[in-house]
Amino acid sequence: MVRASIKDALRYEHPLMQYTSFRVGGRADVFAEPSNILQLQEVLRYGKDEGLDISVLGKGCNTLISDRGVRGLVVRLSGGFFNRVERRGPGIVVSGGGASLPRLVRRAARWGLEGLEPLVGVPGSLGGAVAMNAGGKYGAVGSHVRSVTAIGYDGELHYYEKDGIDFGYRSSSLSNLIILEVELELKRGDRGAISRRMSGIFQEKNMTQPLASKSAGCVFKNPKGLSAGALIDKVGLKSARVGDAVVSCKHANFIVNVGSATASQILELIYRIKDEVKKQFGLMLDTEIKVW
Ligand SMILES: Cc1cc2nc3c(=O)[nH]c(=O)nc-3n(C[C@H](O)[C@H](O)[C@H](O)COP(=O)(O)OP(=O)(O)OC[C@H]3O[C@@H](n4cnc5c(N)ncnc54)[C@H](O)[C@@H]3O)c2cc1C
Image 1: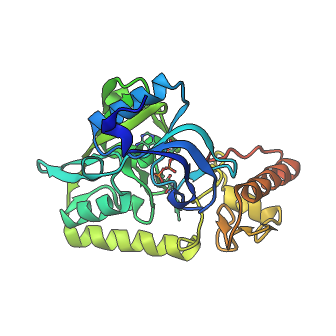
Image 2: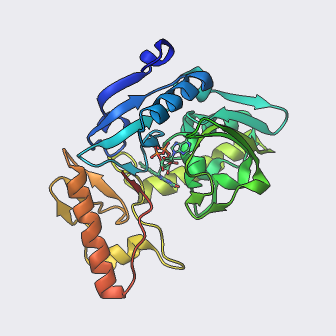
């Protein structure tokens, strides 16, 4: 039975395409956007009582959702509590798991706090960024995390100091949890210098990546010491196309949706790339994006 307190937070057979940067994907059996922790706990209890599989979606910038949709309950943090970005103390920023990462990066720069500049141009939520340890060649978010408050799918709250969290290359030990709040530790710096560094990194990305296209960023992780994009280029798949899913000619590790691509078309291109790289280089590329 659905309690009155979460009735408005639940949607049935809800389309998910609008919540992903690829703009593809089917419907969730049940979709919930709780706006505070109590409501989230109620939603999780409902999911458990109904025996539903639970998944958490951030801003969908690193996720490919199947055309057949997602079975079970998809939770997306929204609303003031999960979106807030606050400065506490000289170098501490506390932010909700659903907060926009670009907004947080801009705020920190405006406050004269340095460390997040490598994340300029990375879309998504802070929760998604911490779960994925988002970053690039100049650094990743994990090195600035001081603590994380998260909730298990069973509704239990957890608190981790940085030493209790493992961050890897585009991964963290926080999977199967919903990140509610992150405390970041940043250094005080010169506002002008931070802003110049951010502009430099953004310009570099903008010149080499199709930032304005519908994509989910890099599709594959770089194999140790190698560039996945360069390998894809070498096997001749730059600009390869399946329907409206195209390997970007600007950066071969991006697949872009140039019109109305489907998840199946994107997946077909992913398999083609994996096959060709395996055939020509004997390497199995590992997907960075999450496929649901
Ligand atoms: C144009 C473009 C450029 C990009 N450039 C970069 C880049 O330079 N570096 C980089 O690392 N990434 C990059 N990305 C990928 C993406 O922006 C990041 O991975 C981002 O951190 C994903 O955040 P999200 O909220 O969209 O996550 P989603 O795609 O919604 O989710 C990703 C994963 O995180 C989990 N997750 C989401 N929210 C939470 C939460 N609150 N608690 C626990 N788990 C959660 C999901 O379950 C899923 O497994 C780029 C993407 C695009 C479209």
